[in-house]
Length: 217
Image (cartoon, rainbow, N blue to C red; front, top):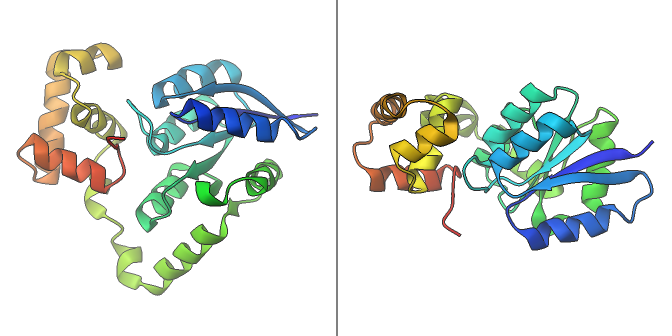
């Protein structure tokens, strides 16, 4: 029986390339794709694939926060992160969110196929660059104890609103997207900025970029 795979990346050309690569394999079938975190969540609810190949930098809802939502909706799915980022921040957050595999895009190809088969068999799969980074982290006790602790202060909903704020969405727009009131959005935003000890939007944008919650590509 084929392994059902879902592709999540905000670049169409990347998704097309991965689809072509995977569909050359007899035991892998791509059953869907999405270009944003919210689209991923909406489609996963219906498709519930075996494996989700997830990019990190996506608009509206980044890939790491999308992992948590995907696994809530479909606990049987496993997630492989395929990203250009290999920093300790991104790796640790992705694994903590529930990813079972992590591959850097520069080494993708046959390695992605190996990772899909590995996580489907119940194993973890980390690319060589990721493994080397994790070894460096384990040798640095300070990095292990304090991996950007300020981000840990925020709930998933607060991180979600943070990303939308720095992407330029108004409180009214965020309220419509998340199906909550504008007042609730403003309450979350005030609480979030207070937790981070940030008082202006430019500083909030810098924080989000530094922690990989969004990008301006």
